Length: 177
Image (cartoon, rainbow, N blue to C red; front, side, top):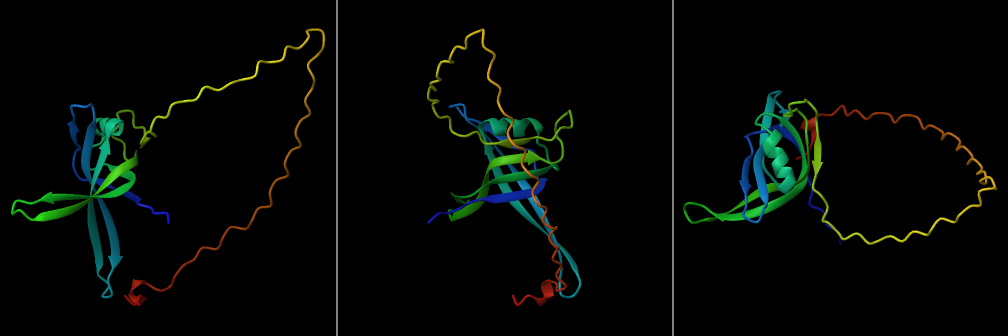
């Protein structure tokens, strides 16, 4: 059976990235992202709830984050959840959940030229196989090149009507849980 571990976040950066360079040439950047959710309680009170996520990026992505990302900027992050185990000051084993980013996009610019950019983790390098090509067949100079017929133009597809939007008249208060 297939499985999936994917998380998508859009939020604000909570701290300037902390960057570490390793002896083997690896680089890691860590920063936090805050997401906000607003909802209304049964009593009509407006509530805003903030969730914090620890995000890490590696190598070239980490260098880009170090250069352009700052506290307060908005960012889009795709990645996977990772569990880390550590021992606290009291000697208790603790667990922490973090996000290892594979793709991100700056939504508010940290670049001096104001451009937004997105970054994806580079796929693992695979050796490229040499491709063989057939040698072109020489054409005699005295004969004109054969004409190719134009492909028939496709007919435009019939346009389906726009879907009707769904609006629920019930609020969260009607949910049984």
